[in-house]
Image (tube, rainbow, N blue to C red; front, side, top):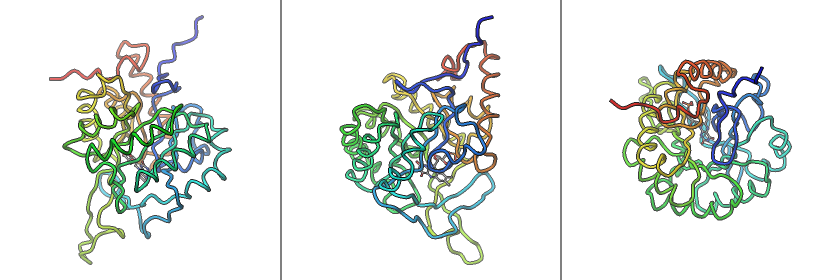
Length: 312
Ligand SMILES: Cc1cc2nc3c(=O)[nH]c(=O)nc-3n(C[C@H](O)[C@H](O)[C@H](O)COP(=O)(O)O)c2cc1C
């Protein structure tokens, strides 16, 4: 009997994935910490915590808040810095059971170039993601201030990544996202990851002060899902489809229906973040549902459904 078709196999540019499900930056440890709960060889990719040139302690605790329709965080890019990452995590990256996407954060063009150069030298991460959209630290979104500033950052990083796919992670801006996406693509991005957390404010009504140490924080989870779907569809139709550039869609994906919606909106792969805090094994459940859905749509491959949303 011929082997069953591999319904969930897909690719991000030249990188093949066993599944469209990707573990999102900052929600699954540095590399392989979630292997205790999940068979990583069954997920499409894991994304590293965003790495900066220097170690960062991040914002003061408390940094995470449970809200009615998701989660608010003010982690502030806490991470071990590139030197420790290369020293302590190179083996985990090399031996990872799945594709590892290296995430970079920074506060200047030089920061991004420095980390990208080290990632390129490591040579074991075929996709590098520029986090240019962190809302919960000072200057975390300098690079996306305008399409021109983003273009400058992307061009500089592109130059030091000759062999890797370069993805740019965009903020959930409700206006002006297509021009940002276009600037990233025209400056050399091979793909887009969207969306990062939404910048929000939560107030403690007793103290009248901001809940959590910082005024501005990042919202993730179900509340941002429909917004993410709309933005993915806008960018897919506005620029990514014609440019042949894949999108990793994320924002509030908790179950297979959420993931399927993102795929129909135009996402080639789907990131899972907040869901991992509720149930670290949720990607397994999501993939099972997706496999059934693809067949129920009369398709052999999930790739046939990318962008298949019918308007109207
Ligand atoms: C606690 C926490 C930490 C995060 N850290 C990062 C990070 O280091 N880099 C990054 O690009 N995104 C980071 N994110 C954003 C997620 O990768 C994702 O874009 C966002 O949470 C939306 O997806 P979700 O609703 O599935 O969580 C973080 C999110 C959370 C909740």
